[in-house]
Image 1: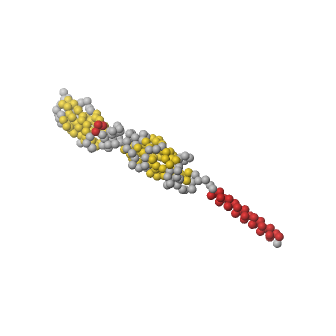
Image 2: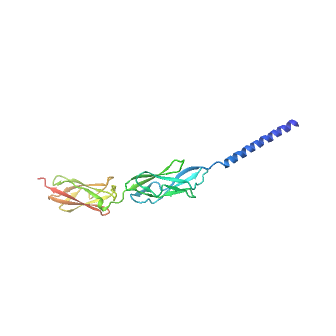
Image 3: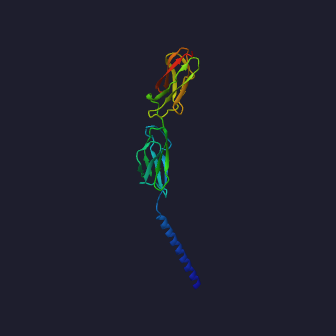
Length: 235
């Protein structure tokens, strides 16, 4: 009987120790600190914005904690890391949904821009924004005038360069060609399209009469440029 009582007492002591240990673990789990754990792009990435204009969508991130809740009141730092655009604020704080946002305005250069959003202790996330050239402006269709065209000597290349108001080349712009003064001549194409450098090229063959021919280049949105081309006899 005595030996049996000792074993029962030992077993009770062991169970008490386990229960105490589990309670300590639970208390530790309850008091573990909550930390900022993640930042994700929520809106505004991969936009295309015309130079000089504001982005349609705001740049927005969401910040979460280590226990998978939304983190409010967290400061987010916004930085232009590529391009010449601007952001509405260098910092903003997350709201009750864990979200922080700023607006973006494109600069004057057609190029890829990037904005970084960073929370202290975490890797930054990036927003890629393509700044694209605006439509051609009336005063910004330049010409490349040949020195002379010779009758019977074949065609000469004629080109125009189409740029926007900031001087960025406008690609994909259709240019229509016509002789408006000074005689006859033919083009190898009625229209041509600007390349990545904003250049449209056509080949012109003069008629049989010497003089000065005026060639008009007109863009699809009605912007015009005149090219004066002297035409001379081969003799």
